[in-house]
Length: 408
Image (cartoon, rainbow, N blue to C red; front, side):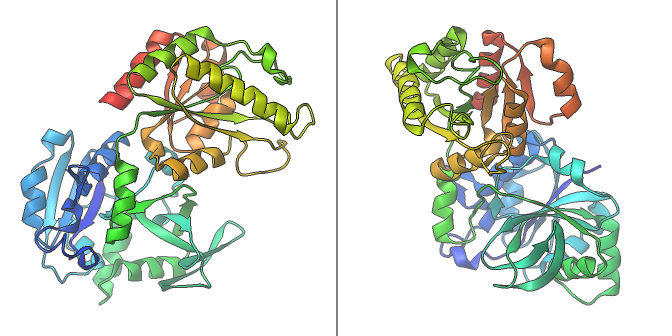
């Protein structure tokens, strides 16, 4: 259904001066690559290899660098126009090159996303499907899971903004601009809202932008390649105490030796690990926070003594009825780690042994490796995961999958 990405690349990038004095904003260098290259590879990893670039300011630099996209594993077309064209005009003038549905991107924002998951929630009857982020000042307000108001200008009365990644029905956009003398894409958004033709999902993780020099520095940290692997604790690093039971004594820790050996090999190659674990035993009074700390400290110490690099450990102490943001399958612990270490979750892997681990990795937009044999294959099929890289207890297969993902 959505097999085309359309990227708006026409602006002057005034807030990035003097970097954009002779360079279009999407071509500003981030860790020795133009920002636009990161966007294109992210689209490619989501299966979007048909890309249309809408150029304006110094558009020849973009075309000279990317050409037809072959060297980047994608197909790129171009539709260039005058610098003074607004966003709506720029998309409308590319009418003949637009597919029935397309993903529209601004060329200065980037964040983790899973297109397959988004497509599952997309309603073809809508004109637009937004990805929104909660902010103190926004242009959307949401009440009881419904967009209640939208305005082109932001205000404190509205607390969500769109992140510049939207699925659009091209015919609706073309019909609107055929009848209207407006030039901004935001006017089409407003018209679609009034007609109740908009859908949305909320992005809870961080997002990065090159809109100004301050945010550019943050984006460089976010996009810096990182070999960080998220991993579950009980049942993955250490043997599970059993269903409904909890590890309550550091003296009774028994390790999954094959996983530990793999972690040691990966650490030698520069990989780091962040442990993500539910610990409802706290809420159930099975163990205290101080006892949990002793257990976690012992695990980290044992692994560190094997030269395994544990970057951090995040745990959820809540009961499953507490409806907290952090208990897996929710993704709160992943978001906290992402913010703390500037991790692009869609470029990361989570290894776990429970179906909730795979649900959490799906919710966090990172890839999942299910450390389990075929006994749970039917459950995996039932949930129709879009991010699952591998289901296996064979360590060699897991290592190969990790190398292929991070090294290529």
